[in-house]
Length: 197
Image 1 (cartoon, rainbow, N blue to C red):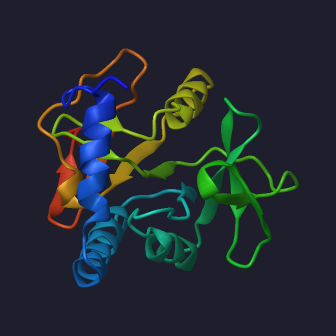
Image 2 (tube, rainbow, N blue to C red):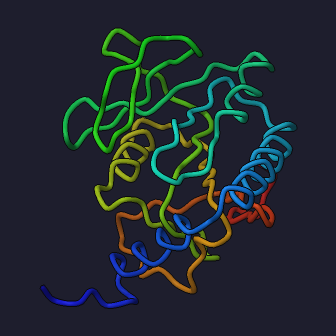
Image 3 (spheres, rainbow, N blue to C red):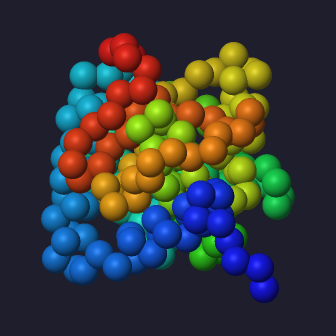
């Protein structure tokens, strides 16, 4: 089997995920709390009606406190859901709603849950750089879903959530890659838009 170049997306993804997986429980709990606190502080002054989060898988950071805070301020919450292998949408979700098994070991709202267009999307990722480029898990679901929203005239605020150990020097961006507007890590918040959206 050929070796994966360390500077390729696959190589960068594998190295960043290995660092994320290696976080010990104490460091992970502290980093999760810092990410949630910073994300809530970032979102507090913003006006939005619907926020899409995600349910963490593997060693991802946990956005559920941020989702709970959004619900607490009266916003609606959504989760990503799959129509087919290529098409991801965002479906309305409230804690306690039934979830069904989906790809990658995730769970999602069932087909009866309304498809919504979030104003803010919290995005998981495998790796990031300081230009706002992210590497996901290689399937392009978020890129396609956000491109579809933009074609329909919607421009959600894209907020990546990640542990600081997932940072890489530079990601080789491709034309279809959707850049983040903000990124929240355990060491701070990056603003890639340069405005106060």
